[in-house]
Image (cartoon, rainbow, N blue to C red; front, side, top):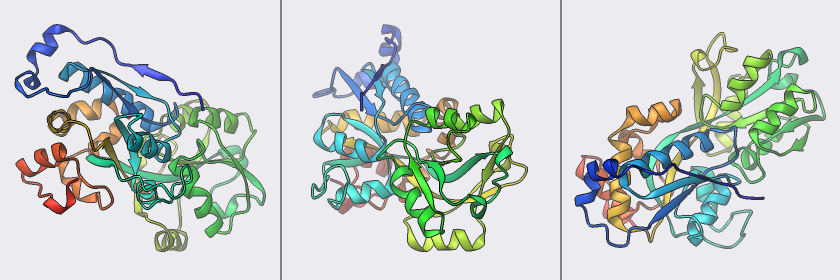
Length: 325
Protein backbone atom coordinates (compact mmCIF):
# COMPACT_ATOMS: atom_id res chain seq x y z
CA UNK A 1 0.00 0.00 0.00
CA UNK A 2 1.30 3.39 -0.92
CA UNK A 3 1.28 5.58 2.17
CA UNK A 4 0.33 9.22 1.85
CA UNK A 5 1.18 11.78 4.49
CA UNK A 6 -1.18 14.63 5.23
CA UNK A 7 0.92 17.24 7.01
CA UNK A 8 -0.61 19.75 9.37
CA UNK A 9 -0.53 23.43 8.50
CA UNK A 10 2.28 25.48 9.97
CA UNK A 11 1.50 26.88 13.40
CA UNK A 12 1.81 30.55 14.27
CA UNK A 13 4.48 31.62 16.73
CA UNK A 14 1.83 33.43 18.76
CA UNK A 15 -0.01 30.12 19.28
CA UNK A 16 3.22 28.52 20.41
CA UNK A 17 3.85 31.31 22.88
CA UNK A 18 0.37 30.92 24.36
CA UNK A 19 0.57 27.19 25.02
CA UNK A 20 1.18 26.03 28.58
CA UNK A 21 3.57 23.39 27.23
CA UNK A 22 6.24 26.04 26.75
CA UNK A 23 6.87 26.06 30.48
CA UNK A 24 7.22 22.28 30.59
CA UNK A 25 10.34 20.15 30.22
CA UNK A 26 10.61 19.59 26.46
CA UNK A 27 13.69 17.35 26.65
CA UNK A 28 13.52 14.67 23.99
CA UNK A 29 10.45 16.10 22.28
CA UNK A 30 10.41 15.34 18.54
CA UNK A 31 10.47 18.12 15.95
CA UNK A 32 7.46 16.53 14.27
CA UNK A 33 5.09 13.58 14.64
CA UNK A 34 2.78 11.47 12.50
CA UNK A 35 -0.30 9.50 13.54
CA UNK A 36 -1.35 6.35 11.71
CA UNK A 37 -5.04 6.47 10.72
CA UNK A 38 -6.75 4.40 7.98
CA UNK A 39 -8.28 4.96 4.54
CA UNK A 40 -9.93 8.16 3.37
CA UNK A 41 -13.70 8.15 3.73
CA UNK A 42 -13.48 6.51 7.15
CA UNK A 43 -13.67 8.00 10.63
CA UNK A 44 -10.05 7.23 11.58
CA UNK A 45 -8.74 9.49 8.83
CA UNK A 46 -11.07 12.39 9.67
CA UNK A 47 -10.54 12.04 13.43
CA UNK A 48 -6.78 11.43 13.25
CA UNK A 49 -5.91 14.19 10.82
CA UNK A 50 -8.00 16.75 12.71
CA UNK A 51 -6.54 15.68 16.04
CA UNK A 52 -2.97 15.84 14.71
CA UNK A 53 -3.57 19.40 13.49
CA UNK A 54 -5.05 20.36 16.87
CA UNK A 55 -2.02 19.02 18.73
CA UNK A 56 0.43 20.64 16.31
CA UNK A 57 -1.22 24.05 16.59
CA UNK A 58 -1.23 24.02 20.38
CA UNK A 59 2.00 22.27 21.35
CA UNK A 60 4.33 23.79 18.80
CA UNK A 61 5.35 20.52 17.13
CA UNK A 62 4.63 19.98 13.45
CA UNK A 63 2.30 17.02 13.00
CA UNK A 64 0.09 15.23 10.55
CA UNK A 65 -1.77 12.03 9.72
CA UNK A 66 -0.75 9.13 7.51
CA UNK A 67 -3.12 6.95 5.52
CA UNK A 68 -2.57 3.31 6.53
CA UNK A 69 -4.37 -0.01 6.43
CA UNK A 70 -5.95 0.70 9.82
CA UNK A 71 -5.60 -0.73 13.35
CA UNK A 72 -3.63 -3.88 12.52
CA UNK A 73 -1.01 -2.01 10.51
CA UNK A 74 -1.00 0.87 13.00
CA UNK A 75 -0.10 -1.52 15.82
CA UNK A 76 2.89 -2.76 13.82
CA UNK A 77 4.04 0.73 12.79
CA UNK A 78 3.83 2.12 16.33
CA UNK A 79 5.49 -0.94 17.87
CA UNK A 80 8.49 -0.66 15.55
CA UNK A 81 8.65 3.12 15.94
CA UNK A 82 8.06 3.80 12.24
CA UNK A 83 5.16 5.92 13.49
CA UNK A 84 5.06 7.36 17.00
CA UNK A 85 1.26 7.55 17.27
CA UNK A 86 -1.66 5.53 15.93
CA UNK A 87 -5.31 4.65 16.31
CA UNK A 88 -6.48 1.12 17.07
CA UNK A 89 -9.41 -1.00 18.16
CA UNK A 90 -9.12 -3.33 21.13
CA UNK A 91 -9.58 -6.57 19.17
CA UNK A 92 -6.62 -6.09 16.80
CA UNK A 93 -4.62 -4.60 19.69
CA UNK A 94 -5.06 -7.77 21.75
CA UNK A 95 -4.19 -10.07 18.86
CA UNK A 96 -1.09 -8.00 18.05
CA UNK A 97 0.14 -8.02 21.65
CA UNK A 98 -0.38 -11.77 21.77
CA UNK A 99 1.73 -12.30 18.65
CA UNK A 100 -1.27 -13.15 16.49
CA UNK A 101 -1.19 -10.22 14.06
CA UNK A 102 -1.80 -11.37 10.47
CA UNK A 103 0.92 -8.91 9.40
CA UNK A 104 3.63 -10.43 11.60
CA UNK A 105 2.59 -13.77 13.10
CA UNK A 106 4.62 -14.58 16.21
CA UNK A 107 5.78 -11.01 16.85
CA UNK A 108 4.46 -9.79 20.20
CA UNK A 109 3.88 -6.08 19.70
CA UNK A 110 4.48 -5.02 23.30
CA UNK A 111 6.03 -1.57 22.77
CA UNK A 112 2.65 0.07 22.23
CA UNK A 113 1.02 2.07 25.04
CA UNK A 114 -2.49 3.44 25.51
CA UNK A 115 -2.92 7.22 25.55
CA UNK A 116 -6.66 8.07 25.67
CA UNK A 117 -10.10 6.63 24.79
CA UNK A 118 -11.61 7.58 21.44
CA UNK A 119 -15.03 6.04 20.76
CA UNK A 120 -16.79 2.79 20.00
CA UNK A 121 -16.70 1.37 16.47
CA UNK A 122 -20.12 0.04 15.46
CA UNK A 123 -20.26 -2.78 12.91
CA UNK A 124 -23.03 -1.80 10.50
CA UNK A 125 -24.15 -2.83 7.04
CA UNK A 126 -25.26 -0.57 4.19
CA UNK A 127 -27.03 -1.53 0.96
CA UNK A 128 -28.85 0.39 -1.74
CA UNK A 129 -32.59 0.55 -1.07
CA UNK A 130 -33.19 -0.54 -4.67
CA UNK A 131 -31.74 -3.99 -3.88
CA UNK A 132 -34.48 -4.77 -1.38
CA UNK A 133 -31.89 -5.83 1.20
CA UNK A 134 -33.34 -4.72 4.55
CA UNK A 135 -32.02 -7.39 6.94
CA UNK A 136 -28.92 -9.58 7.17
CA UNK A 137 -30.98 -12.59 6.12
CA UNK A 138 -31.93 -10.71 2.92
CA UNK A 139 -28.32 -10.67 1.72
CA UNK A 140 -28.38 -13.02 -1.31
CA UNK A 141 -26.25 -16.12 -1.53
CA UNK A 142 -22.87 -15.29 -3.06
CA UNK A 143 -23.28 -11.52 -2.61
CA UNK A 144 -20.17 -9.38 -3.00
CA UNK A 145 -19.48 -7.56 0.27
CA UNK A 146 -16.99 -4.74 0.73
CA UNK A 147 -15.13 -5.11 4.04
CA UNK A 148 -12.90 -2.05 3.92
CA UNK A 149 -9.11 -1.91 3.60
CA UNK A 150 -7.24 -5.20 3.95
CA UNK A 151 -6.17 -5.68 7.55
CA UNK A 152 -8.65 -3.14 8.93
CA UNK A 153 -10.88 -3.89 11.93
CA UNK A 154 -13.79 -4.45 9.58
CA UNK A 155 -11.79 -6.75 7.32
CA UNK A 156 -10.45 -8.68 10.32
CA UNK A 157 -13.76 -9.28 12.10
CA UNK A 158 -16.75 -8.63 9.83
CA UNK A 159 -16.16 -11.60 7.48
CA UNK A 160 -16.04 -13.91 10.52
CA UNK A 161 -19.24 -12.35 11.83
CA UNK A 162 -21.01 -12.82 8.49
CA UNK A 163 -19.90 -16.45 8.37
CA UNK A 164 -21.19 -16.96 11.92
CA UNK A 165 -24.56 -15.60 10.79
CA UNK A 166 -24.69 -17.98 7.82
CA UNK A 167 -24.03 -15.42 5.08
CA UNK A 168 -22.30 -16.83 1.98
CA UNK A 169 -20.36 -14.03 0.28
CA UNK A 170 -17.56 -12.93 -2.00
CA UNK A 171 -15.01 -10.67 -0.34
CA UNK A 172 -13.97 -7.25 -1.66
CA UNK A 173 -11.42 -4.88 -0.12
CA UNK A 174 -10.81 -1.20 -0.72
CA UNK A 175 -10.98 2.22 0.90
CA UNK A 176 -14.35 3.24 2.34
CA UNK A 177 -14.71 5.97 -0.28
CA UNK A 178 -13.95 3.52 -3.10
CA UNK A 179 -16.33 0.87 -1.76
CA UNK A 180 -19.07 3.47 -1.36
CA UNK A 181 -18.64 4.36 -5.02
CA UNK A 182 -18.74 0.68 -6.03
CA UNK A 183 -21.95 0.19 -4.03
CA UNK A 184 -23.57 3.19 -5.70
CA UNK A 185 -22.53 1.90 -9.13
CA UNK A 186 -23.94 -1.58 -8.43
CA UNK A 187 -20.54 -3.27 -8.57
CA UNK A 188 -20.95 -4.74 -5.07
CA UNK A 189 -24.07 -5.69 -3.12
CA UNK A 190 -23.27 -4.58 0.42
CA UNK A 191 -20.66 -2.63 2.38
CA UNK A 192 -19.88 -3.89 5.89
CA UNK A 193 -18.61 -0.82 7.71
CA UNK A 194 -16.71 -0.76 10.99
CA UNK A 195 -15.99 2.86 11.86
CA UNK A 196 -17.00 5.59 14.26
CA UNK A 197 -20.32 7.23 13.48
CA UNK A 198 -21.30 9.08 11.45
CA UNK A 199 -19.14 7.39 8.82
CA UNK A 200 -18.23 10.00 6.19
CA UNK A 201 -18.68 7.54 3.30
CA UNK A 202 -22.20 6.61 4.46
CA UNK A 203 -23.19 10.24 4.98
CA UNK A 204 -22.02 11.00 1.46
CA UNK A 205 -23.81 7.97 0.03
CA UNK A 206 -27.20 8.81 1.48
CA UNK A 207 -27.03 12.32 0.04
CA UNK A 208 -26.56 10.85 -3.43
CA UNK A 209 -28.90 7.84 -3.33
CA UNK A 210 -31.37 5.90 -1.16
CA UNK A 211 -29.68 3.43 1.18
CA UNK A 212 -30.70 0.97 3.87
CA UNK A 213 -28.63 0.90 7.06
CA UNK A 214 -29.05 -2.62 8.38
CA UNK A 215 -28.99 -3.65 12.03
CA UNK A 216 -29.16 -6.98 13.87
CA UNK A 217 -32.11 -8.77 15.41
CA UNK A 218 -32.02 -10.25 18.94
CA UNK A 219 -30.75 -13.65 17.84
CA UNK A 220 -28.04 -12.24 15.56
CA UNK A 221 -26.75 -9.79 18.15
CA UNK A 222 -26.55 -12.45 20.86
CA UNK A 223 -24.67 -14.86 18.60
CA UNK A 224 -22.05 -12.23 17.68
CA UNK A 225 -21.58 -10.94 21.23
CA UNK A 226 -21.10 -14.52 22.44
CA UNK A 227 -18.40 -15.27 19.84
CA UNK A 228 -16.45 -12.01 19.43
CA UNK A 229 -14.82 -9.28 21.62
CA UNK A 230 -17.71 -6.85 21.07
CA UNK A 231 -20.73 -5.52 22.93
CA UNK A 232 -24.18 -4.45 21.81
CA UNK A 233 -24.50 -0.89 20.54
CA UNK A 234 -27.39 1.27 19.32
CA UNK A 235 -26.89 3.72 16.45
CA UNK A 236 -29.18 6.68 17.21
CA UNK A 237 -31.74 7.45 14.52
CA UNK A 238 -30.39 11.00 14.35
CA UNK A 239 -27.02 9.72 13.08
CA UNK A 240 -28.18 9.28 9.48
CA UNK A 241 -31.09 10.68 7.52
CA UNK A 242 -31.75 7.14 6.26
CA UNK A 243 -32.63 5.86 9.75
CA UNK A 244 -36.24 6.15 10.91
CA UNK A 245 -35.48 4.46 14.23
CA UNK A 246 -32.41 3.41 16.25
CA UNK A 247 -30.39 0.57 14.75
CA UNK A 248 -29.04 -2.16 17.04
CA UNK A 249 -25.59 -3.46 16.08
CA UNK A 250 -22.37 -4.45 17.90
CA UNK A 251 -19.27 -2.38 18.61
CA UNK A 252 -15.62 -2.42 19.67
CA UNK A 253 -13.71 0.31 21.54
CA UNK A 254 -10.97 2.44 19.96
CA UNK A 255 -7.98 4.03 21.70
CA UNK A 256 -5.23 6.39 20.64
CA UNK A 257 -1.85 4.73 21.18
CA UNK A 258 1.76 5.80 21.30
CA UNK A 259 5.15 4.17 21.08
CA UNK A 260 6.10 3.48 24.70
CA UNK A 261 9.51 5.15 24.26
CA UNK A 262 8.06 8.61 23.61
CA UNK A 263 8.98 11.25 26.25
CA UNK A 264 6.67 11.29 29.27
CA UNK A 265 6.27 15.07 29.27
CA UNK A 266 5.26 15.12 25.58
CA UNK A 267 2.61 12.42 25.99
CA UNK A 268 1.36 14.09 29.19
CA UNK A 269 0.80 17.40 27.38
CA UNK A 270 -0.94 15.70 24.45
CA UNK A 271 -3.23 13.76 26.79
CA UNK A 272 -3.99 16.88 28.81
CA UNK A 273 -4.80 18.91 25.69
CA UNK A 274 -7.07 16.21 24.29
CA UNK A 275 -8.92 15.24 27.45
CA UNK A 276 -9.49 18.82 28.59
CA UNK A 277 -10.88 20.11 25.27
CA UNK A 278 -13.71 17.78 24.32
CA UNK A 279 -15.74 20.52 22.66
CA UNK A 280 -12.88 21.10 20.23
CA UNK A 281 -12.52 17.35 19.64
CA UNK A 282 -16.23 17.04 18.83
CA UNK A 283 -15.84 19.85 16.30
CA UNK A 284 -13.22 17.65 14.60
CA UNK A 285 -15.55 14.62 14.52
CA UNK A 286 -18.84 13.94 16.28
CA UNK A 287 -17.60 10.51 17.41
CA UNK A 288 -15.28 12.36 19.80
CA UNK A 289 -18.20 12.98 22.17
CA UNK A 290 -17.08 9.66 23.65
CA UNK A 291 -13.43 10.78 23.86
CA UNK A 292 -13.83 11.66 27.53
CA UNK A 293 -11.71 10.64 30.56
CA UNK A 294 -14.47 8.50 32.08
CA UNK A 295 -14.03 5.97 29.28
CA UNK A 296 -10.39 5.26 30.21
CA UNK A 297 -11.58 2.03 31.86
CA UNK A 298 -12.54 0.59 28.46
CA UNK A 299 -8.86 -0.20 27.90
CA UNK A 300 -8.27 -3.73 29.15
CA UNK A 301 -5.55 -4.60 26.62
CA UNK A 302 -2.72 -2.08 26.35
CA UNK A 303 -0.38 -0.87 29.12
CA UNK A 304 -0.66 2.86 29.75
CA UNK A 305 2.09 5.26 28.76
CA UNK A 306 3.50 6.91 31.93
CA UNK A 307 2.70 10.39 30.58
CA UNK A 308 -0.93 9.54 29.88
CA UNK A 309 -1.30 7.68 33.19
CA UNK A 310 0.06 10.71 35.07
CA UNK A 311 -2.67 12.96 33.67
CA UNK A 312 -5.45 10.47 34.45
CA UNK A 313 -4.18 9.85 37.99
CA UNK A 314 -3.83 13.60 38.66
CA UNK A 315 -7.44 14.07 37.63
CA UNK A 316 -9.07 11.34 39.68
CA UNK A 317 -9.07 8.45 37.20
CA UNK A 318 -7.04 5.75 38.88
CA UNK A 319 -4.55 3.75 36.84
CA UNK A 320 -2.62 1.30 39.00
CA UNK A 321 1.16 1.07 38.74
CA UNK A 322 1.06 -2.46 37.33
CA UNK A 323 -1.02 -1.19 34.39
CA UNK A 324 1.64 1.37 33.41
CA UNK A 325 4.53 0.49 31.08
